[in-house]
Image (cartoon, rainbow, N blue to C red; front, side, top):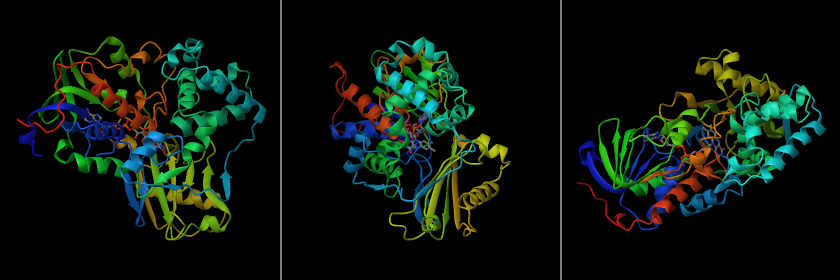
Length: 456
Ligand SMILES: Cc1cc2nc3c(=O)[nH]c(=O)nc-3n(C[C@H](O)[C@H](O)[C@H](O)COP(=O)(O)OP(=O)(O)OC[C@H]3O[C@@H](n4cnc5c(N)ncnc54)[C@H](O)[C@@H]3O)c2cc1C
């Protein structure tokens, strides 16, 4: 669709963002016969935080990838689109590189308290938990200390786990938010295991790409919405290049931090403005490194490396294609702090650090790497980060506004999901929920057209 074709468009539904949430919303509407829609995506390609690339000739995900059996909405969507999953490789010994031995009883006490808070939480209204105000004043580690946990190794372990789950430190993430995040994903055990069960064959970005193929001219890339004007009858969206789209309803399918970058006329209610302004996103990086073969398997290793506090990179996991034929691939995570302390501003330096770390961890004169790819999420213009390590004292007052529609504006994005918040499953659920809000809206005056695409 050219710029002039779009510059004066009227549509029933506009969707802002073609990440998994916006894509799932569009797919859901299409399946219900609503074809009159426009999806406006700021980036060069659909997918948002899912990004598939090729390493040594095989696909790899440099954004989200892990899928668990309890992520039923995502699994259904994959099946609908003809996509399948591959189990992650788990056989063999993990390399546990913790530089500390911790007191398991103290860790159990923390996990048990976390589980108790999660069990008493209604995931649709976590802010009503009886201890919400108390927990929202504390960081995760402050809460652990208040529970009587004194072992610094346990506190370090908790911090490392908080980083692995949510890309934030135990010293900065709100205890209430963390308890909710863990409960919404099915609990500590599920997060440590079940959610890491499988990945999507061929790469998970195919979800967004396949939906974009069906949308055809109804999706517009490089179209960041900067202004949203709304009244009782209509919503008007203006993109960076001056295009205007008028819709009967809009779904905003991005994180609160990105909502904060859109100018609303009239402004949104103060709770929603506050929520968007205070929401925290943290951007990490993900890399993949390839070897001629998965040599670690022959040595009895699973390929998983659990980092120490001082490791230059975070967790590493085997991502070799199916049966191990072809290249051996490891994926891993890092944040800027880890790489900054390893003084690696150049891609070649980072590739070298990762390769040396792999060699060091598997303890052999391992073969040289044959390929390296990475994605630094902080480099994105319209994505403010990967996960939401919200801080104490920022959320409680405004949190209840997270998924409330405001007039004709509906909110999706994984951050609005009551289950698997922050995950692909949460993104899909949120997109489908926002689409359902439109399908069931009690406004017969609204002409949500089933059928053609109306360009004027
Ligand atoms: C490195 C990494 C690893 C991850 N690993 C996993 C994992 O293994 N399993 C898992 O379940 N989850 C994982 N996640 C999280 C997962 O990627 C997200 O939960 C999910 O993709 C979020 O989808 P979304 O559609 O809600 O948001 P996004 O993917 O952020 O999509 C929002 C879209 O809106 C667009 N946008 C923003 N502002 C505007 C605007 N003003 N106008 C138009 N468009 C706009 C953005 O460009 C983006 O495409 C990971 C994330 C990262 C970054």
